[in-house]
Image (cartoon, rainbow, N blue to C red; front, side, top):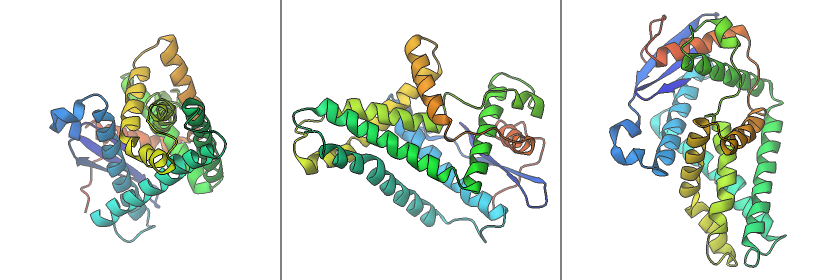
Length: 279
């Protein structure tokens, strides 16, 4: 799946070997509304846009591959997003905050408390990715992830989108979602250390959820800034992100690269395969 400001495109390798390509005109909220481009706010908007499109694309690709009978309805789509968000908040926000409080007094040492909570988050994230990364289907997913990165890199360099040119590109990309999650962990240490009255357990844990949009917005600004600069600090941030991407990005095969090329062409209105409307 590839997304541009005006559309998103999906390319799927069908069981028969062909590649199904479709392009969906869908203007990003950041192009529709001025407020969606405000610093900090734009990160939350971009995250919502990406999640909504990703779930639609996964549902549609599963249907095309014959794994589901029909596309997920909008109600089921947003219900799945809500459940996923709640699970993520529980695993990566509430649980680390609770466990860190068992070791460090949050009221006396808020910075150390949040640093330790950040380490727990990182450990949970790494453990989760290592666990699911052993599954064959997830391994293929991570290989397609690498194919997407390579295709985007070739496109951004204005290279012809051929298998040879795309394969030569790096598998890691500075604007990857995995890097964004990494920056969320870093930003949370700063933001949560400034929350007043951390000695109150319910408030301490509830405030971590309440200020999550601010954390996400700050993480997006770090991602945006580091990906467009080459100073020592941004290089360090990119290196940290690339280190975590090693868990979610694998070298793709040529047939996977072909799929990523078709999706990139469709998203950028350069499709050589006629897009098929979603039904």
